[in-house]
Image (cartoon, rainbow, N blue to C red):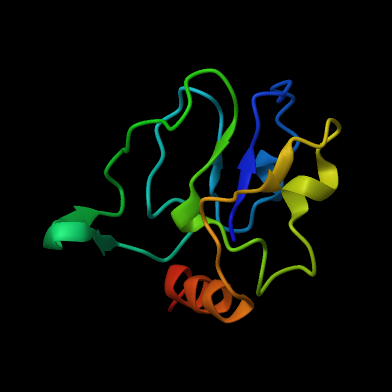
Length: 115
């Protein structure tokens, strides 16, 4: 599963630099598929291809947020999600809407960082 940031976030920013996939963004900040990954383009549902550098709509305007499709729970990098390890208020938690196996997370990590 992916990690999510709850509305208890105090916007300290401790989590953002810890993410090896650059899946964490400040509230209101646009995100990209390519940021922190090797993706140059992504095919989304319906077959539309998006440039990896194209800015995407922020998921939250108020709090730091995690792009679930880029979150691998640090599989392939660390033994535990680093955002949760450094969060001073424990608001980086499992996202019940994104359940993935270790194998799926490893495959996502490979996809994000294929050379």
